[in-house]
Image (cartoon, rainbow, N blue to C red; front, side, top):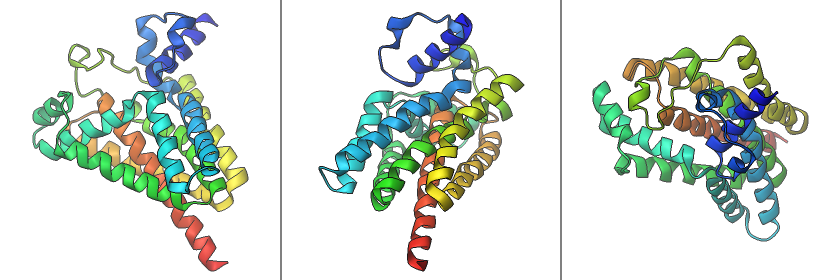
Length: 259
């Protein structure tokens, strides 16, 4: 029980900026297993995002409400995944060789590709969630967070770490999941998805988008750098999530136009 609590606490400390450290100090090895509990952090971040969209839509226009909700999630996560997306765009945009890509991704300075990647991501995110009806925007925002993190988690099972522990940004190399922890991981992603299936009807088919994105991402990363990094995990999560949001909008518009 204590080991399970420490692993959960490590995941919450790693993926959010709330003062979880007041509850304890998990051993270092727990941080190498945080990815398996990543979807459960998505319950919190996705729930906060959906809740803020719901709250602010009653006060301001939908697009403004989405901006405020995504800002709230940024504060909650410390822009952890957005930092990964920026480094990912800089690395693969500016690097040609494997070593050059990894070197650029490790650089803490943001470049042109990183800026453009974040701008495009947020323009699409605000445009897509702001275009969905309030109920569906909240459902998709919540479900896509946990499910996309579950899908992005598969990077560590299909690929090796592209660096060594000594050269890793956070000095942590994620451990591959066992059968048991993989099941725990999948359950964490499926619970929000079940809610979308029960409440969102056909929008649940948008969950296929992250699976496609991850499959392509694994192929791409294996070809380019022969593995993954923490930045790749964060970037792939955001891309999966955006793909799911966009697919949900396409499905909803198709239903709305035909009925």
